[in-house]
Length: 136
Image 1 (cartoon, rainbow, N blue to C red):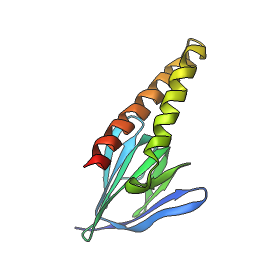
Image 2 (image 1 turned 135 degrees about the vertical axis):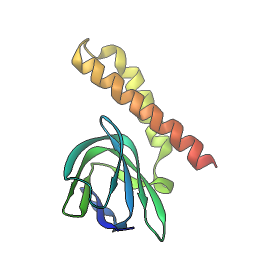
Image 3 (image 1 turned 45 degrees about the horizontal axis):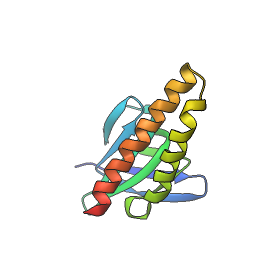
Image 4 (image 1 turned 135 degrees about the horizontal axis):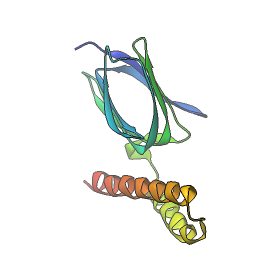
């Protein structure tokens, strides 16, 4: 299977760089997979799991949103926060969820409230996935 270069970058570090056969992304509009030869894309990411599949290994990373661009056999993922799944601070995510839940009644009704509810749902889904995955 043909492979392509993947770079997962946050402002302070290169989290991952290597060849992959496939990468699954938590797109803002839904999950998506990228294979070699994929059409050029730029997509927003929601908080979730980036799965990198390679012939020698499979790896999972937690991202807290960001943007992904695939062009000319290179996938670049830019995010404010990312970590290997085993290194991610699940307790910190739980604290963020609790803080967002406390602040939700103070958010004005309208698009801002809709965005906050959607983000809270993403955080909760991610927390459920991580709680089950890291407990196994």
